[in-house]
Length: 456
Image (cartoon, rainbow, N blue to C red; front, side, top):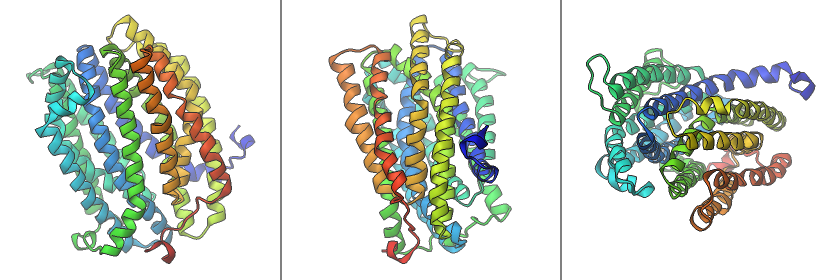
């Protein structure tokens, strides 16, 4: 069937070797979040709202650090095309230093001022109190996550996608077992509820990082840079890094800030609306990982080809991956639409919330193919090709020019039901298709960042 769409066996094999481990890793990570939500959801709507809103702050942190790591990853994937290991180690070092500084800021804020963070999202004191305990306990995991991300992105960019996947698998095992023990107080452990979920998450992050460092350094992986190589960077390299990485970092911060703004808009409609979107978004993220995985694989493939001076092949791959990703979106969307009622039934919430979750999931399903197209262009083609400024322009315009204004107008002035509000927000997705398609066809996104013309 796939051959009818022009996807030859060699292309599919190259794409899937990279994409499947990334998709599985993301699926494992999303499953970890789903596991948290299912277990916390059995305690009630206040608890699930508290964890959901607390995790909005975590997502701001995560995407800030992911932007730093992915900024380095753009260089590393192109340098891998040239097999320049020394420079790869230098960019890994820069990303580690910058990521650690960022994680210390976020961890400190979560531990010292958790009340301020929670009050950004809600004024409900019950939800705030639960969220404060969760944030304080989970703060240290931010530092661990930042280190894991830097190594994971470097491994991915050098076409070693299985190692981060195995690390995430270890993490979900630890998280699931410890959640069960500490949320519900099993086998003599104290029943800590929301705080128990934070303990499980933190220990899971420790296990993930330990596995990655063991494989990299004890197995003498190519990314196993000694300390002197990690700090062997000069001001010129830092300027090169930030010239490309800052737009990526800013892009991810802008995007997650928009998602956070959506959460604030949802909260204006009440705790039930917040719980509805927390459940629906968690499920939606699990299906979106297929698009994100294909997009990340696209960035690696395209970056490697550009680094190896195979620009025509990079262009052809971009067209094929876009078509393949959009077709995958049609299939995934159909699946979400059909199983929406089954998914909603797993959560211990009111009948009204369950019905809203089904409707939201079905709206999400209709937009999946369009969303996949945008994800592949921004994460895959534009970033992998080095065209990061155009990518951020599209993201800012879509989220802050369309989605966020519509969210607050709908929630504040028209008091729309959560289902109608979400449909309004989804209008940002068609814009991304309209804006990125001409850029894809033009080939102007192909930029070799490792050449002398991009070095200053």
